[in-house]
Image 1 (cartoon, each protein chain N blue to C red):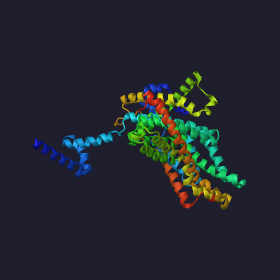
Image 2 (spheres, rainbow over the protein chains, first blue to last red):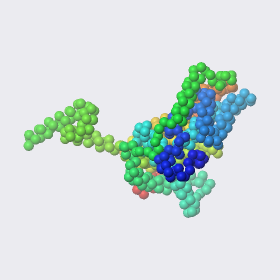
Image 3 (spheres, rainbow over the protein chains, first blue to last red):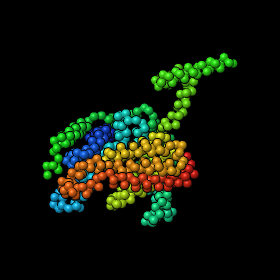
Image 4 (cartoon, chains in turn blue, brown):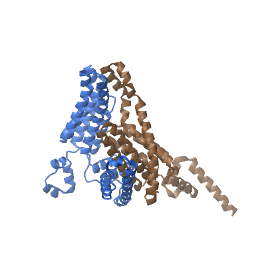
Amino acid sequence: MSRAREQTPPIEQYTILGAQTATSLFSAERPDPRTVLLALAIINFLSVSRLGITVVMLSTGVTLVALALIRAWKAALGVLIMQSLWVFFILGLPRLWANGFTAFLATTSFWFLQLTGAGAIALYAIRRIQPGELVAGLRQLRFPRAIVTPLTVLLRFIPIVISEYRDISEAMSLRGLSMGWQAWAHPLRYLEFVMVPLLMSCSRLADEMTAAAMVRGLGSPRRPTTVRHLQVRPIDVAWWLVLAALVGGAIGLKHYGLNLENVLR
Amino acid sequence: MSDTNHTYVKSRKRSLDGVLGRGLLRVAVAKLSMARLTYRGALLLCHCNTLLRKDIMKTKDFVNIGVFTAIYYVIVFATGMLGLINPIMMFVGFIIGLIVNAATIALFKSRTPKVGALFIMGILIGALTVLTGHPWTTVVACAITGLAADLIMDRGRLQKPIVFSLGYAVLSLWYIGPWLPVLINADAYYQMISAQMGKEYADKMLWFLSPLPIAIWAAIVFVVAFAAGFFGHSLLRRHFQKAGVAK
């Protein structure tokens, strides 16, 4: 929401420049979805690798800067607090108070540190990637139809599943079928009440969607044109340089054995 | 009469030799230019095509994959959110998710019984889990289990509940994916503990870093999913096949 507020040009500009230019203005500062995917892959891989805590902290630092640049202050703060907590549990607490429990905590915190590092870049990706652009970018990367077409449907369908579930639970409470906490006593019965109408309506929607989508040319072998022209922008180049530096730094740290654990020891 | 019969046999022999003898290249060339096909060669190719055509995906299958992956993923995510209450509830949530999704997969597989459907679904689920902050090991796990489940749930045997349950149990093994980093990093964890608590303590903690806890979790997932498969299959039979949304 905040993104829309910052970057939306005044209404007059919209009407004068037309849809295509308005869209490109709207997303002037946004990196190409493929760049975001590359960043996601590299930082996820570095976080969940055997390179140690320093690399996780470095990649989290990059993510934090990226989150701050898109002014996702809340997300950045949350990640920062969580990561500092884990680092404190790993490096600080066992030194202050060494016993079995803190050692166990340190081990689990290492796992959580890696997961939070992977989750932080995922937060950035979710904020920056628009479904339509992602699909267009994947098409340009010559991803097979077998992946792109289901992905298009999938991104469109996730909100539908949630709203269908809401409708079903409302209908259940209208008919006096909502079981409340008693659902825990008869889980299979409750699941049947929910799942049968959900799957039934979703498969009906799937049939309708197939017909509607085929009319619009979804799944055809030709690549459709896109409203926004995907191209390399300065911010993409900046991302590539940062990612290259990160990978180089991680390899260098590994090579010279410069790790935070070793330094502190 | 006998003369025509003779030429018929002769031409059949020649074309079969041509197609089979010169191998795949000849088949490809023949497929490209229909005019060059002999009568028997065309029949042979048509036969190959009918074998293959069953498993060629169409737009309808792609839409189905997208829709059911969305349902599957929403359920996995929603039940996994129980972990926010406390870590033990996380495992309870996973198990509920396993039971619920049996029905999703049963309906999906009966609507799209083609080999490759669960493979694509696995890749997409893996991609979504990475997008929501899981390690990359999940994508690998999802793709492998999806393909294995695809091969188990053969079209001809899918009507049997036990085949479906087995395939669903194999598919569900991707749930160990997020835990695999512990295995990859086992020695880093070990060094960290031994630096802080001494080698003796680290040796005691080694159990947590061994494959054993993951194997136990995999066994639990397998057994629960196997049992849930029968539930999902019975839902399919009692409701969806009766209503005509599934075959």
